[in-house]
Length: 226
Image (cartoon, rainbow, N blue to C red):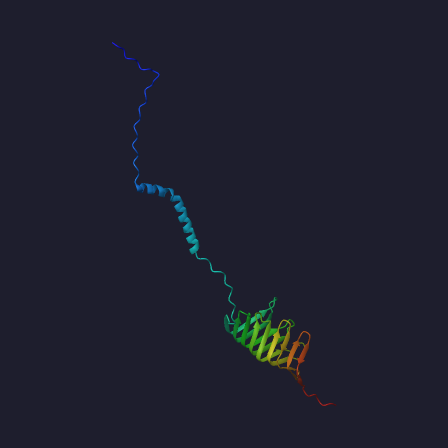
């Protein structure tokens, strides 16, 4: 009986060929689309947020630019009837009193317009000045008054001095400086003497009357000479 030759141990057996794995099933197209969309989702959210921010900025109402204040018209902002206004010195003594039928305040010029004005002013030395006119234009504190139409100003007597009167269609009174001016004809009366001039500037502090233009005067008759 013949012996079967043994296989050389140096020669190994060939490894078995593994079986090929079956290909994985391909996901449906909806899953692939969802996967791709999920990868772009952060970028999409940022784009939407940026678009929303731009829309908000574009449509947010902005405040109107500051418009310049409209110029004030020459119209009264308040009216008073049958009024009386007084101005006092720091020590409490009355310095001026203005009354009239109607007073209108104009904010554009801060002036007062008064119908049928009556004014009474007291100087520091106690001398009283009275004035009246059909219409007056005064500044806010009553220290400067323009008398128009039948203007009549009387400085009453004080300390033996005779009173002095001024009449005209226009008289401009400066109460603080005790001056009286007129660019229109005026009549000045004192102690029976009457002087007429085309214009006048009277300064009570300096006891000076400047009469301008054509000046005429009438003096009371004097007694017969002895």
